[in-house]
Length: 178
Image: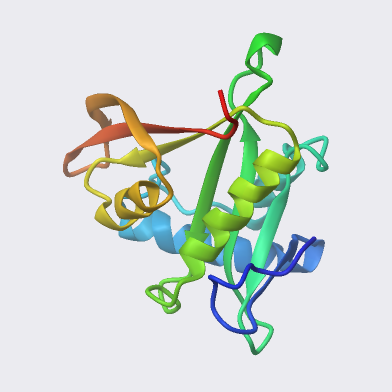
């Protein structure tokens, strides 16, 4: 795996997720579950559920799961490229996702992670990158706009989190010259 590009935080490093990263991945993801507004899971995930999620990304050379370490070596974010759809004709399309530790936000880690994921998608020959984002998630929407994604869909009241309905927005970015 390559280090973060120069537009990322100094001394941050993105690498393939390992078994010993599962607790950090689980903790960061569960922060998002508890806070709401960035995942449709309503109950925190177990370590074993997150392990299964990581293992579902195969082959890993096509669907990487990566972590971002800060300059102290602490995992502060993770991201992945996932199969967009199981039917073969969609193989040129990939979905990206990323999560940043709540104590490490607003330091450029999300930008660095999305940049890395987009570079990885291009290197792997994908034509289109997609993202599914709650319409109220202003930070992620700003990040999609920063990278030139276009909103191609909107699903009102897609999720009910127990107290409110949340709208979903669908985003895409062409990765080639066509």
